[in-house]
Length: 491
Length: 106
Image (cartoon, rainbow over all chains, first blue to last red; front, side, top):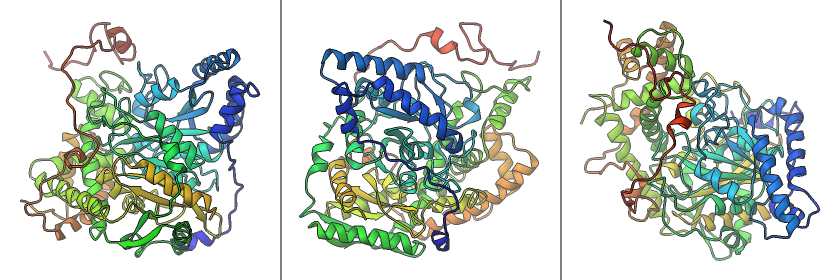
């Protein structure tokens, strides 16, 4: 596996860096750029590049231009503008938008147009964002390469023969190719962090409960999080500030006040204690990824951080624990797709029972079926204690181990993924190999803590490497601060 | 507490598929049998850990210093989505109810 990083790239890069959010907003406020023209120029780029990348599944032009015109009216009147005024943003297709197709990358939701907006969508729009459309992803967010989408894979803008990562592959690719200034994704076991690292952009895993899950098509409810992607740390911090906060529509939503993440990310890192868990640098880590991360660690040391080793000895148990818990929850969550109330109904059935099984058989893809079966098995009579209960016990061991380690350090840094972006088809027929790609991301998911992945150099073949910065619950500001220092070092 | 078993049989895959309302073709069943066994063999690694006396963790809100799982909202009636908006997307409806195929043969 490590050999591939040295290969010469054979396809052209589609990477393009967007203007910073602050610069664009400034232009719109000054009247030099019209929000409607900006949206128009993004749709032109999408028309040109999306056939190759397949990042967008559908566009919400009418709604986008209506919002852009509202912003232009405000700017013309000289009224104060909201924080994301006129900023073009894309939404992962597992978050619902009223009247817009919301497929979750699945055939079973083809044609479904939900009658309501996800809370994160509502908040973005209230903050002035112009929502361009819905972004491709692995079916029901189950996958690490975006190859499980019923609507075709997304390609990595850095090198289109490679995967963008998953499950939020469209969200990462759209930012990397400047088909949006920022996007929303979701992360259950690494689905924001891993694609962000593969595509060379910033991705945020907020603390569990920090961003409302209302309107997120559920995969594993105790693990699912909504978070932003952006081209730089400051923009990602601004977006999180907009979507974070208590929502009575999500019972697990945190009532804690939201920090000023932008201000937090501006603070110097000197004096911070940064932990480096040895278990994340063990066998299986690509040597070029390791070298890039070590440069990032050196940069933090040079910026005045204290680097210290920490130990998380149960790390190896995280992937099996994650796959038991996530699939068990998924098997329950996906029971709602039965062809009765919305989505696909098989036309080939004469009885109710047939209708359920035919609709689900024809509507779900292979990976979703595999996970439903595994989850149903783990929850079934006779196996519940051995699998599901055992995994929940190990989850506590893993979570407490992480929280204990945070008593000694302010943040931890690790590689986000053991390898850079792999090629389309390379792991598609080996589910277990695909699961192991999540080895550095799933523990933070199980523990509920927060993190940011930030670009940290590249391999010889110019494939991006991402550094994962993890912080204590609700300490997103610290994660942004450390990520900002790594970004500033330009590794 | 039961132990994780390394192998599942075709009959078990079929039983689980039935529980999950999934109809698998013969070919799919074979493939799933192979994949499930590979995955179950891998997750059996958890048997190495002695978790006697460890309380299961269903939700991180149960951990002391986590963000979520605090307040219980007041039990007040609030308007929900209109029936018309919801029924609009139903595969088959008479406007008031979802229609489904016959449940019982007469």
